[in-house]
Image 1 (spheres, protein in one colour):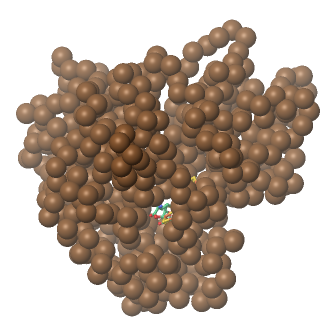
Image 2 (cartoon, protein in one colour; image 1 turned 120 degrees about the vertical axis):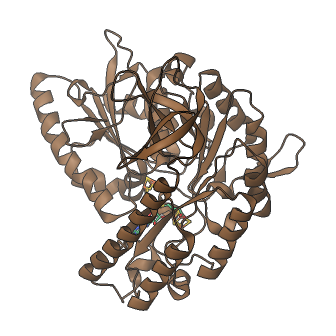
Length: 465
Ligand code: SAH
Ligand code: SF4
Ligand code: F3S
């Protein structure tokens, strides 16, 4: 990751310089689905003559691919836009084009407000209309300020080009592939059903086609993405109904595709077939992100999660019976309105029972337009902060314990990128950890058997077994 002049991380990007081509700088916020979308926007823009740059200073177009999940995430966008406005002024004095675009979930949720609050913005485009980006930019060049936030009737994926092989190859041996978008669950804290719309599954043929292109370009590991990926449904080749399990079995047949993952799942959509796939499919990595959010049944009900703490624990037990070496990851919210000390203790009890290998936890953030925003019993900030600190200390301890438990064990790692020292490579463990090792006669994309020798702050060290 490099620092750009916004003081933010830039998304690493492959570059191919054409002398007269326009350049686009894309800044990605939020979840993996935005990371995937940014690549697809880059591909659509490449058809339009744009080359991607990591240096915002040379960009003719800056696109912010934004996240609306918590208040802080949304506010970041407006401060970035303030800095971009100043840049645009300088550029205009030099007589150079500088187009500012806002994409992603803030664009969808606050489109009109962005145009009002940030006069320098030229185009606002929601996640369902990225295939219309080139036309939108043409309209900007004709002097319009463009807003595209309708849920498109046409399928964006059918119209978004997949990059050519060389460009795909430059993106490495692991890849994301969005198979499902949107959410019908309406958890009372969450904006996603409003920013991404209702659940839509991509058809099998489209997914297979894209997966095969990725594998042909050297990809060995694909992570299927969806806001509710395990709610993916479509029809198989004989017209039969397929769920995510059937899709995983089919993808595992692609020669060269060694590893599969999927994220994010909702506990209510973990069906028997999918649990069975964890037992049977060696390509399916033993790692599952299955957020619970809270441990108290009262809070789970108020969140509209539609399962109890006990049901969640029993589900994990069934998954672990099917795949004993599976590691769990989760998301938590502390300080949902009405959360008492006892409710919070229930969350800690779930954490103790599950033993997470990895987890993300957040203070509840009130989001306009969600049912949670109308609740009166808000938890004070200092109480939220104190609970978050306690929770994160537990989760960090569990993460370290898990890493420690692997020392001395052997495992397969997928070699992913060069390491810090010459001769070193960084691989990825079945449980998504980075593994550093000295690698002679090995190349990126190889899967090798290693023994873990030590743990570092955020990674493991290994030697060839
Ligand atoms: N579809 C996923 C979650 C997507 S949002 C699921 O159902 O689990 C990613 C995470 O952000 C959520 O799991 C939740 O922990 C957190 N989150 C969402 N809305 C939030 C809010 N209003 N305040 C704090 N955290 C929130
Ligand atoms: Fe948000 Fe709930 Fe849907 Fe996840 S399942 S995206 S938390 S509404
Ligand atoms: Fe954020 Fe939208 Fe993803 S709100 S978490 S970028 S779906």
